[in-house]
Amino acid sequence: QVQLVESGGGLVQPGGSLRLSCAASGIIFNIDAMGWYRQAPGKQRELVATLTSGGNTNYADSVKGRFTISREYAKNTVYLQMNSLKPEDTANYYCNVQGLLISGRFDSWGQGTQVTVSS
Image (tube, rainbow, N blue to C red; front, side, top):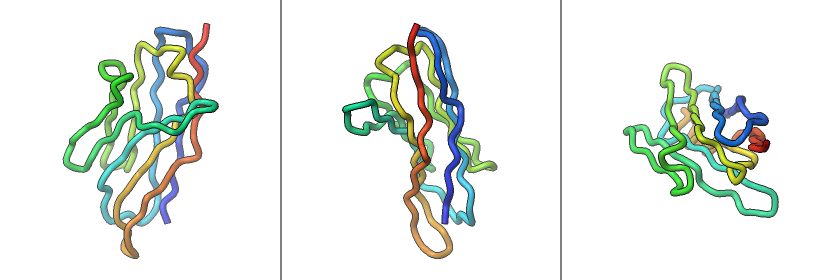
């Protein structure tokens, strides 16, 4: 199966930056889409940004112009560059990857990485 390993979360002051990484491992035939979602305490998980294999991106309105999603194809890794962070960006961030294995399709989630924006 596919395993996702996330890194890059932490504590940052408002206005600061962080870069999240998510590496997918396994015998992956093809990746159709990679994305980031977040969940704050007491709230539902929400989409932050997604990137398709064709290069199409989709961002939540709340992060447009501040966050950038990108992918390193050779390493099956997706990144989320987060700039101008706000306290309301505080959440647990989850990576999601969808694609195809030799054995069939997969839809995998990472374990989550905490981002805290506070002074």
